[in-house]
Length: 484
Image (cartoon, rainbow, N blue to C red):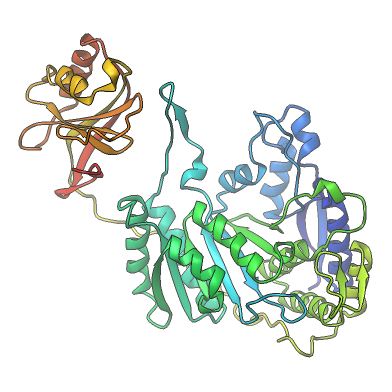
């Protein structure tokens, strides 16, 4: 390695500067060929009035280096501040979040010493798109957006990761028994792509039982791929059952840029006290070294770190009276790792990264045949809080609207069918979904919808949202109501 690789570095807030100093000292001692472009992010940038927490020059640095080693930050309290992580992920297309969750027993206390899983989480879509609206006095909505290309990229990444790293199984987790369209798309895409990897086992778990199994029998999992929100939750569960969230590193990978970090926060309560464990950021940096083509250095760092754990040199968060030999602070822990550089753990399996496989992962999105898309109805959402919220009254009013045969077929409240023939026990808010179709549920025109909306307005009702109903190759592209 004759030339140094330039990376972008952010020291962050709270304990960030301390753990970054420790991490960089270890990398340099290991012979990592790096040079740094240091940027400022986080609390002080937010307080300058920059809502993203990153100045424009920081984005320029990432475009140049394409590799970001980032310490945790503090987001000021109060509204108006965007998540820096979400901004970075979406701005640079960091679609894959990769979190290894491995036990280091008995040196790190855990009930699950055989755990060695990797959670791969879709990073750009789902509820994290942050598209929300307050629509009535009582109801807000948050849109869950799942795309086939987004699903295909992350699922293909999971199988390619398994293939490249000698993993045997990929497990998909969704809630498609409830969200049959959104989560159903992810599951269906998983099943299709799994057929391209016959040498890798593939299975599916509903997310609730899947999470319970991670908490109870994590050793049964190898690689887990899932949607954004679920992945955020189960990756913390998995990290905790292995012993400590404070040890976890994370990669956020896109087609060009990648970000590496610890999974814990900035811990301002212990900032500047030389107490923080730098292991999470260090493990993120080890992933970075593999990513930029310095796997030999990554092995040296990982093995020296594990040897330090074996020798009982522990920071306070993982210190155990019966096992640890010395309680140390942040910088002394880093010095202990440096002292063991070139050594390997004796009781834990030494780290080994594939130094020969330099081929990039084969991540692509397939072109699907265009489907016959037909407009066959419309859901009109109305804000209505009159007549004791009696669905019968609202239904009889809306039945007066008729746009060339486009008529009311049902009303739901919070997804539950309340007209016609709803249950009197159903609690109703002021937010109503009113579905209009013609008798044959055949194709309609946009002009009919515009006429319908005018008629609804003329009836004295306020419509707050319109969602067109489509079929694709004759298959319904919208959910049925509960009770329909």
